[in-house]
Length: 305
Image (cartoon, rainbow, N blue to C red; front, side):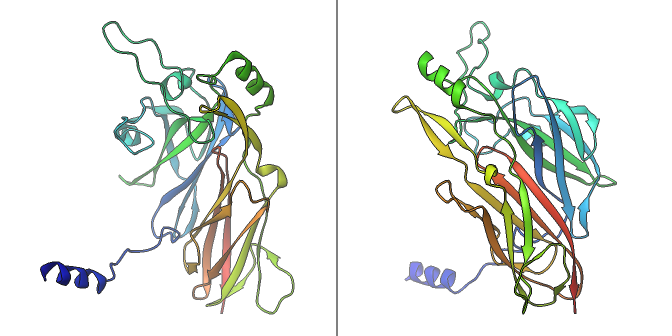
């Protein structure tokens, strides 16, 4: 009977899960974009952060740092805990910087670990992700005044050697593989009531209205690339999936994430935004491909009575 009472109590209670992740109520780093999206270690990238709060997009001082150690194998996190606040800052500071990916990135975070120290066992190579890729984690620490700091992690894809493949497959891979490029957003539109055609954002929207939104990306954004299959020991072609994350400072989004799978050839994603009270508000869209490419758009939107 005690177990039955417990089950009924749980079924009768709806936990308060707080605001959805798509609603911006405090400062957050929504994305870090690398340009180029994939780079060989010891080459330059430009890093750009998207930092927001309920008042809009921010441009605070940002302390950047390369994570220098991978997360323990027992951890589910992308990086070790000491990277968030402990990573050494780079000399460059600001919402956007240009810097050089460490020459050791493929040995620290990739498939070619360095030789072990005398008396120590060999280090285990890192596993590639489902796209065959490896990433250099980068810490962005936004300073908002006083002691307030907002951390975020970006992942720059790094071009490393193909692990555990025959020479013939390696040569095929080098001939067929092209480094990832960031997706490109071509248009973001809103469908207003009683209008035949959608209108490009930003545009004034009526209050308390369900507004269909559509983000479109270029045909070239979802790229085709080979992945080494360790079972068949051959290269298998894949196409990038595209994921869209939606954020707003007010109102309610029907979905936090939308997008297309690698088998879906459409080049747009849709959502619905139920607009808030009249006044200024903000909308952000972050587009990611499965190889770590990032694009984002920010809109200051006026909600009309």
